[in-house]
Length: 365
Image (cartoon, rainbow, N blue to C red; front, side, top):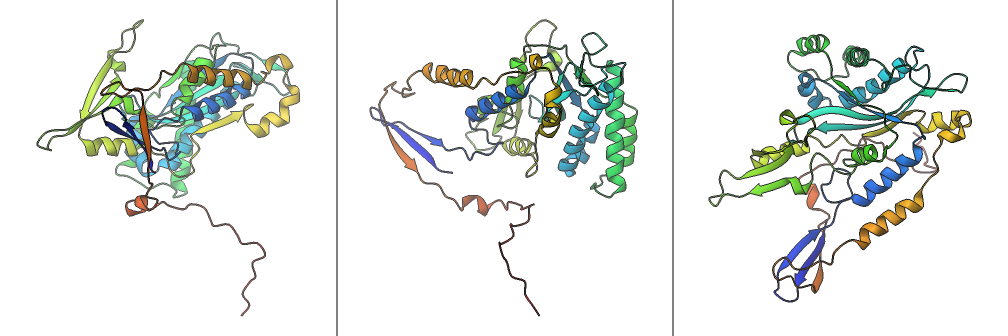
């Protein structure tokens, strides 16, 4: 992609800074894009509490998911929304249509394969008469067991429907795996509702323009004999977490090719939308019922606040100095991009038909 070579005018030490390709999975910094996404999300939110709900599918399905990424990821996100929509429509729970923002994650802190969907759901919804209905249960949209069971049943029903349509690439012992999942209690984490949604927005935005891990948590350790090289991954060890204390960090060491494979396993299929809006937060639905939502529940856009936040961030940056001699004067020279390099290794699939030529004439025989 090209870049810049920065050379210290004092000691001659140089460093390469490569340009980001702009792809949402690129590990290079895309902080501005995350800020803009978070701002757009904040403008969609209503002035009501939100519940952070995390839908996780069992690891039993990992092998099947890796062979059917697009289909399994779609089912996971659709099943999460249908679960919320079905349960909140019942008068005993809410009796209205909520809004939901969903972001798909396929990774854990250690870059392992861990499919789950983070959602932010309005604590209440609009009923058929246009009235806002609050949940009947304290601090939750529906009972935990009810949400877990509903999510499991809806997911498996969608999966079986896809199997009957021959849309699934089968794996060994697929029927046994599905039966085991049917007998398990699925994990749906349901946190307390909060009106301070900025922290939750930042959490969701963290991986919108990045995948799995940041460069700061990766360390390549080269062996002098060029054998047994390894990559150290710093991650949060939730298994050792003590209640009321910060999550401790741990280090996982793996071979470089294994690290590359784990990283690439989280790259989503082409054109897959990892962030989706449902219910009230769906653009089509919101336009249809916007007049029914009370003004006191709507938020005003705050673009000015975003501009000042970015300016404050830029103003707080310290001047760059050479990491060798701490001199602050540099020479910058461009690194030419090789636009054909990627095609030596990767063939980019095209899932879309080419655009039709205007006024194209048909051939007559």
